[in-house]
Amino acid sequence: MRFYTVLRGQKEEVLFSPDGGQNAYAIRELGLPYEDMDRLIEGLTEEERRSLPERAKGAVPVEWESVRLLAPIVRPRQDLICLGINYRDHASEAGSFSKEAFGGERPYTIYFSKRVSRANGSGEPVPSYEGYCDSLDYEAELACVLGRSVKGISEAEAESAVFGYTIVNDITARNIQTRHKQWYLGKSLDGFTPMGPCIVTPDELGDPKDLAISSRVNGEIRQQSNTKYMIQTVAGAIAELSQAMTLEAGTIIAMGTPAGVGMGMQPPCFLKKGDEVVCEIEKIGTLRSPVE
Image 1 (spheres, rainbow, N blue to C red):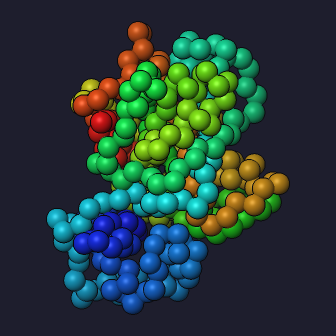
Image 2 (image 1 turned 120 degrees about the horizontal axis):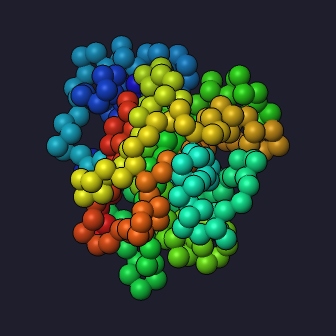
Image 3 (image 1 turned 60 degrees about the vertical axis):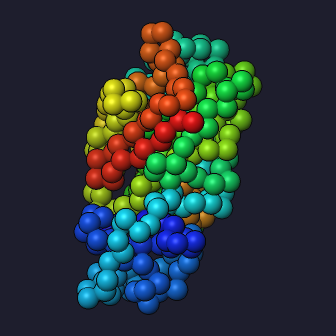
């Protein structure tokens, strides 16, 4: 199953697709009361979830040309939880760019947060912040969205708490990130959280530890890897975080990025106005981010 958030006329709506996005149906027209993705994630019962394909039979699908795709969770209720340096090849390129900021031994998973008041949908522009940011960078990442609140969950049980998966482009101002010696500000400027194009449920996605992940800038391949090279897994991150922290339904966890980002190139090659980044993850789709 896939879930989308779209702008239809002047109203945001949640859509459900049983067939990989070929056809999509407005949740409220299927007789369910959920007005946005957060409410759907919190409230959708297992009985309602199982009934969705049957409810869609005979219903009129939404015409994609009549809607504008938004981020699946437009206004996350909390900061995103992000994993840093979670692919070994990215650890090497990051350390080459700045040993002070990224070097050294890291025996434990790095977690940081990314503030977002409004996430960008696929096709929505990323601001370049000329005069403030001189090193705008991209990071294609798999992200999981929790479907229920958990605390103290085991690694074996953790994936059962996942509502679905999406793509996050962890846009970063590298000069701000490295100047402040921590990552919060450089990751959290308005417009720095492209997300989408949808949320894919675990039954459709399959194993999150074996998905091709890539990014292109202006059509040129930059990142090309697989989630099997993540150091910390989705289940491991959920379990570790939840040991002493309540993770609420709707929590978004971005799982880090592989090598190939702009700061890792020789010389570094950062984004500029007019560029377009396309992040792609197998079985989820593509996330386009033009820079303005």
